Image (cartoon, rainbow, N blue to C red; front, side, top):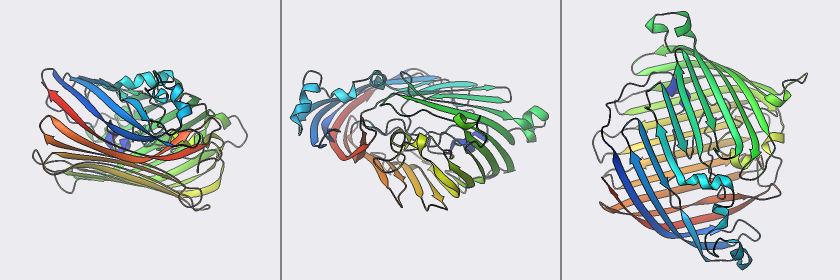
Length: 443
């Protein structure tokens, strides 16, 4: 319930990387924000008959901002069981009340760090840590729109580090800083800058090498999975209001590279980014892919934290062992951002993606939305992930709405469908919902 969905960056990271970020005016001084949110939450037990339990929730938070160079936020929801539909589970809670599943492994303690940023967005390096809801590594060949907190009993804090070293961009990512889980990295070379000193050659031809590996030790145990990819992006049109990029990639499962016939894939597509109006930014991506077997692009995708136990459905083969017939697929993605002209105007950030597999008819899709409604008092967030909707479907979703009644008082409503990974690798479905109020102040 309490705690907004972390929408790290819904605009695809590949288009973002095509242009240099303009320098923003520096923010001066140190700012503090403190908040306390309390409410009630209905959440399934996640075990056995999966009865609906009721919790009283307190969520203290403290945020500190040092301008463009530094910020962090601390806090964690404390869920105290008030009504237990499975009384035998009560004895497992800390003190008989504090929900044990929220604090029963090392990774859960990192949830106290809600957000950390060191370095400017347009600087030579930057470190970020926290939750990730729609995060992609580079163009998303391997890690695409990844959500690290989709499992309701697993609360990791991830981190990514980005550095620019001349024509080279290096990015490293860990989905869980306290466990042996998903690690990924990308090295991207600006070929135009390496071969020419002309300004027109900068950020026009990009070569990237990605690698990702999940060791499966955290949030439950799952099979190991590793993959690598090689991608090339070429800027065909780069104008002030529109950009057109062609891109191609090849990828393979790292575990099979030594075999005679490795599991591999290839992709070709285009990305268009335009600003039809001054405050509107739209990006579209279309891609044709040839893939199959144990490899596909976007292996570490939106629903990966569930797919690593059951690739599709609720009790199927884990993704690391799920073999698809060799097939073509079509992938599409659209992202839009509407910036406010003045305080209180509509502010919208949204994106959606989908993939259709020709030979099997499989369809995967997901969407993410964040909106500040006109008037500036109401904000809503939505995250929906659909997997194999045509055969063995799996659905997850969460929403949260916040409305500010007076300057220091706001209300919260949330709900969604959740899936609990079980010891045997299956997934147990349930619904959740909550109501609460919050108070905050800034200085």
